[in-house]
Length: 265
Image (cartoon, rainbow, N blue to C red; front, side, top):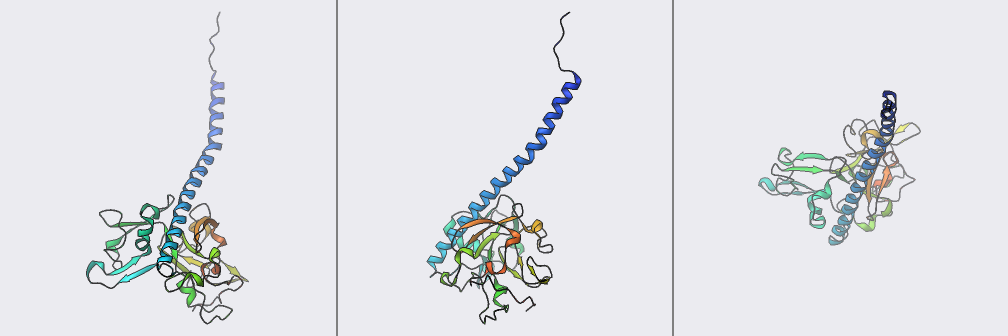
């Protein structure tokens, strides 16, 4: 009698188990590959923002692009205009402001202090999507550091020039962020950097996503698997660990060996 060549139930279960094991191994790899592709796309965007910023700087007597400017007009034009609108003539793109991994939507009409006329609108509702922030480092200017520098330690913002950057390749200008500009926050008890048990001015306000403000940890603040994309003053871009960011990386001075006092101003 001729035997029917078919899978037994046990053989079928073995095949299914093998497929399940392979899927469990490969799916995380595929997910990591997709995340890596998104991070690379994001890095390309932020690199182009750095290039556009350098073009802006050259057009304005080597002054850094401001995080925002105020239009003191009457009517809907009055208010603050973010740097994305100022850099638009150089980027020629709105999509360049969007990171594939995370985007924060702001509705311009709902924010009274924004110019309703000159900020970049994405659609008819005047929504605006943001993925990157520019380092303002305003707070550092008002903090007395351990070297007692009477001029403070300040970052690349309006009124300062490219020539003031002592380490342009190590000074951060653009970064993954939910808020359009960011600065060192000395008013929170939580800090990224601690020395000798003293918490001081190490948290960068505006970075990352989600609950980063109330929970400034790598998990809460990092956009790309504990890393963030940054562009430096000299225009080059790279990916760095969020926890590796130090206060001196946001200032124009060569102050790597100098730390803030740690007291609230």
